[in-house]
Amino acid sequence: MYFDPITWEHSFARRWLNTDFLKQFNHDEQSQIIETRVENNDNPYLMISGGNDTNDKVFLLSLDEVLMYFGNSGELQRNAVEYANKGWTANEEDGVDVASFIC
Image (tube, rainbow, N blue to C red; front, side):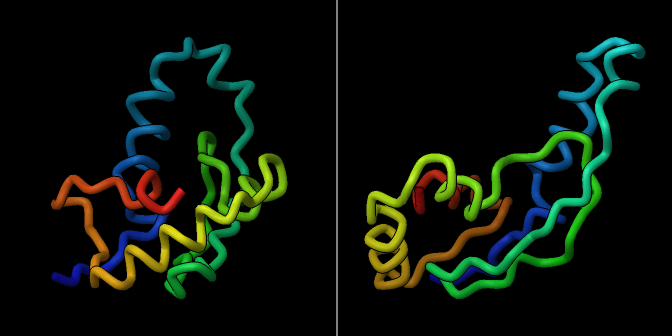
């Protein structure tokens, strides 16, 4: 089974973080949250495009940032190989959280 991967630009997580989650802050708090240019680099483990860069007030750590701050235990590559061997990718409609499977 093969599905096109979802990029950050089109993800449910991005949409939720920058709408419903952001609305949990009052107006003054929201005005202090600075919009940031998010570079969406390609995923070298799954060899998929990171998609277009985005401008977001709330975002998740990139793969590069996860590796920089938490190190690489080797699980990323092992899980990516397992994932690829099964021929899986996922999209939002599947309800599969690819990031948690890969990380």
